[in-house]
Image 1 (tube, one colour):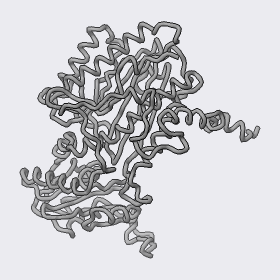
Image 2 (image 1 turned 90 degrees about the vertical axis):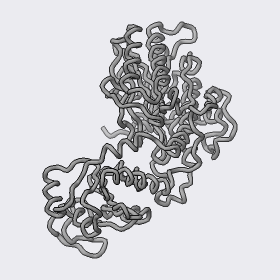
Image 3 (image 1 turned 90 degrees about the horizontal axis):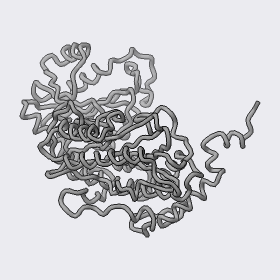
Image 4 (image 1 turned 180 degrees about the vertical axis):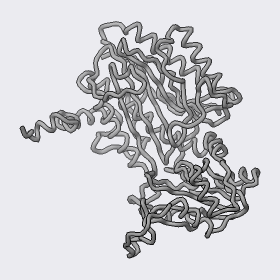
Length: 485
């Protein structure tokens, strides 16, 4: 039977728009200082009398979140300084040139933000080169050449046919080109300083054979650990941009909490997430310098919001959808990832929702309280000079002391970077020494599928001298997280 349009809308997420979604969003948006259809263009407008007023104040001491950046991305000068630092480290190993192929390393060093696919890309520089040499596909030619560009070699697409460049008027079914050899041949023509080239990884045996055939006198040296050690320790500029993302993230959490308190059991976790995401991204993107959509503006910026309630909270990585009606005597999680210019990270809060006429469930209370205390343990112990494993040991020991070992499913945290998960890890087997300005998630979650509840948290914990600090100003308090409907 052919479905009617109304039936199709009723059976899909578009039904939200036909069931008062817009008016519900407007009602909560009005609490934030402006209706949804005329969102403020500045974070300095009237603050909400509800959840927004409960956000914490920034720390006044030195070991607190930095002032948010005023820029939307790291400037090119930051990348040039970073490349100079990298070259200095390579010179200490008698390496006078480098080739990076990992998209994350390309972005980190050059600031060339791009979409990653099966199409290989690379960046090469000699110690004396002022600008990077790029290996890139034709579809990115305008973005590559309009950024920090010192020449390069372009192939049309994957797979590239020999001599075939349709955009230049040459269409032919040429022999498939080996793109790795094609890149090395381009580097050879560009010229190489010295006999050792730093590479962000190891070559496969087949690649090594091709390299010896094209560049017989060149030794490729794996310098991936050098690059990762740089990326793990953030600069002040990176942390300031990170905090800028959390300014909006904090407001998003306040909006989501207000949405739940305002509409209660009338809505799903899915609606809470989508309403919040729509509202905060409109504010965020309206505040950016987008330069009429020009490239290199507003790169890797946006906030993704998730909400889950009930049994789905009882699994660390659920395979079921987040589409459940909010109810009483349930666990709930508001979570997501926020980034501006590629920088930012997670912010999760764990809630208990109770009937206003009944007491909170004792079992949920215990799991919430223990997991919340574990968050504080991680923050307190995230100081320079201790190992990742020692922080994990303290957290897991506390969990056992409280008798909740049955509900422990994973390590307390992972390193945080542009890619999300990054080395090192707050794990029993990671003996990396913490250094100031390393960043970590904060996830000492506890999960109970039997009782259909779980509590997981996250934030960005930044390592400092005496203890860590958090990027978010969203409270961990019972006032914030224990709700009655």
